[in-house]
Length: 215
Ligand code: GRF
Image 1 (spheres, helix red, strand yellow):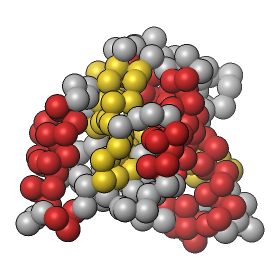
Image 2 (cartoon, protein in one colour; image 1 turned 180 degrees about the vertical axis):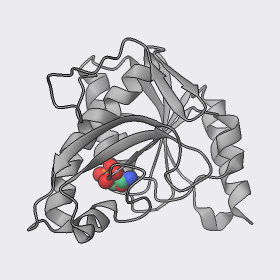
Image 3 (cartoon, rainbow, N blue to C red; image 1 turned 90 degrees about the vertical axis):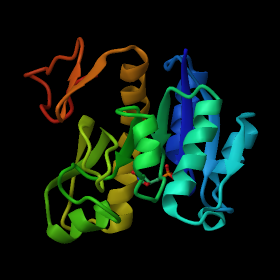
């Protein structure tokens, strides 16, 4: 059973998809702690509903960002967390947390990295006029959405798409691939070589859509 710590800033629909996968028995994991950095994050309500411990940690209570991340790292370590999941955590994570959990922090980004990193990945894709976008689960390094890619899934983009319509289409896939990536980790199937993530027992179905290989 894998011990998870989740960091979120907002509504927490990805957090919910992880809870649902655990409760459905698809993911052998347990969420030990939710940490939010915003006092009104709806993710906190979800934790309460599912009896998951929650801490609100206000970044303004700390003299600098490194001390804030040391506090977070300490709380996660104290609960035996093995994998940290950024589920809509709207901050660039810093060294004190990354060094405590090397290649053990995952993030979901709503675009096909390395395209459209940073905020509003869906808006960036719609504005650029690409025909395909999607979402990416990756390990976290010190850059902005630059860490090794674990899984990706693609959606078509229409010229009529707005940030809102594209975000909804992408979000449905986020809710599938994030728990799947965590499951691969929980099953011990991921290893990182440089910036390549090897997945044991992963094969691309050449006859299916190459962009969405089965996990
Ligand atoms: C998602 O689109 C995720 O890709 C991005 O932030 C959003 C969070 O949504 N990192 P939610 O809070 O999980 O509903």
